Image (cartoon, rainbow, N blue to C red; front, side, top):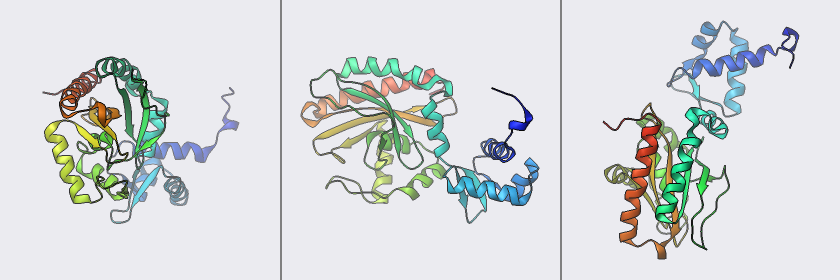
Length: 258
């Protein structure tokens, strides 16, 4: 590839500089701060910011007048699966857990508004669940969604809550924010989350969060199976295995439980 100044796209470089700058500030920065720090004209800075907001890469807070990165950036990053070789760390443990529980074991992360399924180790049963990478999952009624949401910081969790529509799938689906927050407290008490036929009748899921070296719940692992195979006693046993596996993965990612 030619490394020639004539092939530069100045506004693209400025747009990337904006993203890199905002990645340093969780709460975001104002237009004035961005243009001053990056030495960009106000008109150019505004056009870049407006374009990134329109495309979903930035979020603009009307109250604070701050721009900050959206979760869409996280989605892109995990599609590449480069951060700390996350998938390379997780995948062997998915297989080990699958060999213990025999059910399909999955791994997913947060996207911009929902979760994103990344990888799975298919179960050993003739009837098993198979998902396609990139498939979104709901946060209000899925085991991984609850597992991650329970451990997010309040401001990040509030962002996701503001996006959630609490769609009802059946009579067991949680459709009230207050009830949902109470459910998240139970998840933190137990250390794992459940989808007890809340999205698909007859399907039970059990999930636990994975933490990285910054103490952030960077994903979740979970199992899915028909309720006929997952009695209360089996759920209790499998939940412990899932939490143990999530703990091992988290420690390998640099998280300390001390």
